[in-house]
Image (cartoon, rainbow, N blue to C red; front, side):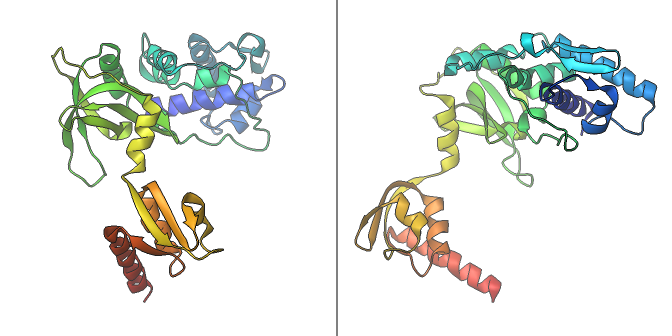
Length: 308
């Protein structure tokens, strides 16, 4: 983990630990319960780090205080009532955090944790150390976020390198970027793939070497970006017909329309159907389409060979 990543994680942990407290915490409590503080370092070094972190939080808008051996967040001036944003407003807020901040402090401000905390998200950590956060927004390099968000703000086309898997060759892609969307703790760069002439989303952690392209062309988004990401991850959709006896394979039955033992599906995710039908064999039998039936058989033969 880089120094910036560790700093962002420590600031995040400290913010939520203080917001989850009913009363000010002692310095000793912070040192013992919040991940990111070395319990073996000297008292002077710990106090210096905590003082620096409180100052960093205050610069990002968190009203944190430390005095007389205690540290706390002034919740009355920080926590907000529930707020709902339109997609456009949320995009503006996300991009705004990229302005005027650099390094780990900027990454913390951009990460959205301050906004989550301000909305009232709290948790008590009296039972043990605060667990480290596994989230893309804490791991995406700051230079990638800055380059992508600059293109988004200016409606400017960009090119970038993308590595689909750790072992795959990097690909050079061209996109009109619309936003960075978080889904299931992962961050995706969403936009219009110029070469494929289609909506696409790319895992932000696998995006590198972002370059602006000088052109006046830019294809705007036509629907909510969250839908684009969800559809791109869902995979191809198909229509299918299966034989599923009544009372068997409930997961399959609930997703289709039953007529006796025949269950039909419209616009169902192909990959899900193949895997689920195989898991319920021999109670579930694919009648059509033929390629799905063949994939189910191949999956079962592979599983049989492995166990054999």
